[in-house]
Every structure is written in structure tokens, then in C-alpha cells.
Length: 120
Image (tube, rainbow, N blue to C red; front, side):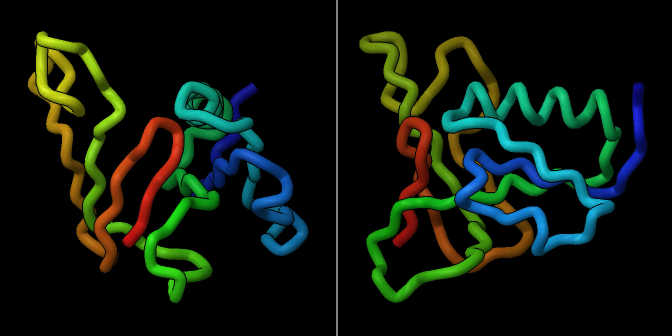
């Protein structure tokens, strides 16, 4: 069965977001940790809810101890792809997709480390 809702929130663990703090009309999907689980949860959310916006909400590591709360990231760099001599670290061989991703909003640069983020 397909429902239509404008927003869906994906979060790895229940300890990261209490759904009672949100409107009951906003589905919260707990994906489990990792990029694969997050990708599967997004796929299922699209199939079930056909949302206009998916928010991936969660925690991240940081270098700057002064940061806390929800942070909008403006640039991310994929760097966990390691293919040996086929391509430099972070580059997917035989792909035209970029390894850097930019947001129209946000003030912090981030780096994807495996299944986590590092913020300055």
C-alpha cells in the first residue's frame, strides 16, 4: 500500500530521534547503522510514501568541539572508496559521478568516512 506524505525522516537508531517530538503525520523510519541500511530505508520510504523530501537525520563525529545540534553541511567528500591502482581514494572507477557533493545551504564542510561523517 502506498501513502503520500510530503516528508519522511530516516534515522539509524531510536536513541537519535524521539518520534514523539514530531508531528504524528511525519513518518520516522529507523534504518539501522550504515550506508547500505540507509539506502534500503530510503528506497522503501520512496516506495511506500512517495515523499517530496527525505531527511537523513543522525549523529556524526566532529573535530570542532563547539558544534552541537543539527548542522547543515554544504560540502561532502566521498573518500571511503578504495580500489587500489584503478583510481585514487574516493573515486569510483568507470563512473562519471562526482566524489564531492554540494548543498545550496549549510555552512560546514564534511567528509564521509566509511559509514560516518566528520565535521570540522
